[in-house]
Length: 462
Ligand SMILES: Cc1cc2nc3c(=O)[nH]c(=O)nc-3n(C[C@H](O)[C@H](O)[C@H](O)COP(=O)(O)OP(=O)(O)OC[C@H]3O[C@@H](n4cnc5c(N)ncnc54)[C@H](O)[C@@H]3O)c2cc1C
Image (cartoon, rainbow, N blue to C red):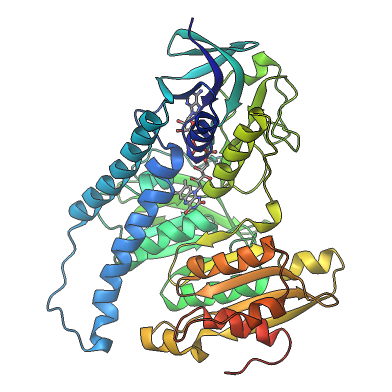
């Protein structure tokens, strides 16, 4: 029977990064994957295909609505959706093949098939038994189902089907105003669909700073997206014309019907802890079915570890990757660590939304005294030159020490801009530290510097 120092279950960003780092540290490593290709949700049906379509649809939208402002005429614009989808497939394949190459380079054995823990230090993959000194569960997550709404991935789709539609829907109804629903909703809105988002809460993206979420909602409304907040879908019926949804106020009340030709179910994701053999192995799960781990990613069973979407914390690829590195280093006897205070989160709509650290609501709830520094992109020269002035940078700093506690950006390239503020938080910087850094002109990053200056009431360009 083949024996490994580390056998990782799942090849998503948590699993494949863990496998590569463990191999770099000299351990004998295997990674089991039940999907035909490596890379998990992220590379196959998540981050990468959604960003490919967001980029394509953004280009289409810009050609249709913005080029003329720059004095560029493109004649009659056409949409070749089949080509757009094929390009997305090429982008996905380049990434999944890239992981295959990295496995070969680092001598990680790819075990093809469904893995199941069969006993202490034992895993079966596709019927074959393997011995492993350490087992890392990185089995990820899947779309959360909703009672009364049966997914067929054709007319009622999850994000997977939502990234595969063969024609632009006339009316797309998105159930859930979270990150995935708004990103995929944006793709189809830009390509011409009428998009209605139904959200249970009275606001979109509940994890965002409330002021930023409100401004974000206004921008999306300006783009033509419709919102039904404080509403819940209780049933979905397939008809000849499409889908009829029954919608009620969240708190209960009169129901009404909404027609859609495609419904995207995007109410969240749940841990894929089923099918890995955790219960039989005696691994404890929490109340939401996630694998319970301690601060070092160890489960209650010696030699079994877990990382990524299958454990608690934000369901983000880079969080899974950092945990993959940390657990590999811990297994190798080093001091792996993840700083959960400095994990950025990005929504890749246009404009983008990015945040790191605490929101105003969290600081208030914890009774922390803070100052706010804000700077709008309307006052940034580069944003004006680009014609992308929606949004602002918002910085939250400790009132007494000036230490940066949180940063939130709604605006062009917010996802790129948040890296500087993540670095600042990681290094324990103050708002003044950021304000004193020389930022190139004219760049969007000057808005970050100005927001830091604004925290001390001394922004220059406002
Ligand atoms: C549409 C969409 C867009 C997203 N966009 C972003 C984004 O822009 N940025 C971001 O940070 N995050 C994004 N995410 C979230 C991100 O994809 C996840 O946080 C990330 O993939 C989690 O990584 P993971 O390694 O924990 O699990 P996963 O990527 O889910 O990988 C788990 C792997 O384990 C395999 N597996 C499960 N059970 C077994 C078994 N028993 N045997 C063998 N293999 C098994 C699965 O097949 C899967 O390939 C997005 C998600 C979706 C759905």
